[in-house]
Amino acid sequence: MTIEQILATRDLEKSVLVGYYGGGNYGDELLLEVLANRLKSQGVQHAVITYQKPKMYRRYHHDFGYPLVDMNNKAQLLRAVAQNRNIIVGGGGLWGLDVNPNIVLLSLLLLASKWVLRKKVWLLGVGYYNSTTWYGRLGAWLAGKSAEHIVARDSETLHNFRKVTKRVSMDMDIAWSIPKIDLQTYRRDFIQLNANLPIARRTVFITLRRFKPGQSGNYNELIEKYVANSQHPVIVAIMEPHNVDPEGHALIRSWQKKYRHVRVTDFSWNPLALFLFFQEHRDRLAFIGPQFHMIITAYLNGVPFLPIAYDNKVSELFKQTGEPAAIDLQALTYEDIQTFTGSFYKETK
Image 1 (cartoon, rainbow, N blue to C red):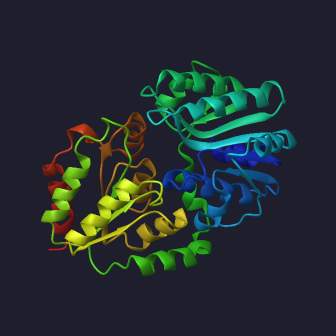
Image 2: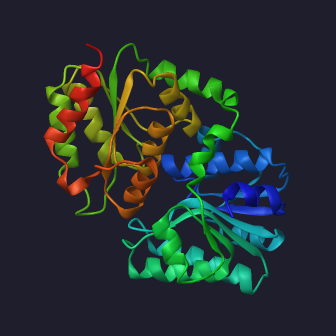
């Protein structure tokens, strides 16, 4: 069973949408925007969105008429779960390298919702990877025992959840359904973003990421070396708000001061505005970055990207996109970046 089949054939009225929404991370906000949009287009009138910082919701999302629940307010959250019929965990590699103890608490909530409150729990387009920790595996087991059905986003997730439950099938990440959305409704969002980041000629769009200790190798150093030696326009972005990643923000601001051809930005717009930005400038952009959903954004728009894998979830993604020569982040070299960007600019000659 696919995500689209569940949306089309199951009664998802009175659902609570749960994920890592509201932290300002590009991938999580993209998943929420796409899922809420798809639910609305399927005629779901009554749903509740759990969100970490409700005051920030309008910065990143359209209003689908679904009320918000403060994810940090346990009373509000429990009330929403009690008053609705379905719990939908909408995507993300929750049980992977980036897992944290809060995921176990979420998994316990799912278990209680299923067996105590008799709610239906749907895990749509989720990820469960061998790279996770012991508490990630515990959380995945709890979530699997809670689920009415699990739609795995890749083969490794399918294999892992099949050890927990038979109610699992494989599809792809929720973001792959972006082409089903009427993107014209996001044109105004795109125009605002495009005014802040105008592109007149070929540009490399580069993203930095907050890594756990030991994950990043020398990625930032290699990127700065490229930026310092390049004479072409470069956009460097952190895909979170600057207050969430102040170190990353300070770093890219220092590059902007040192290198005249560099523009920088943090993530402060509707995620589908960036999708349209890549679509509009597909012939003038190349992408370098490790983020799972940034890679999907580039791929779906035909923007060339350097295939960097820092975790199993990205390796699984490259199996789906057909990248035979993905580069492990720890093995990335300056020559890899030079070869990729050199090929991109060579096309203009």
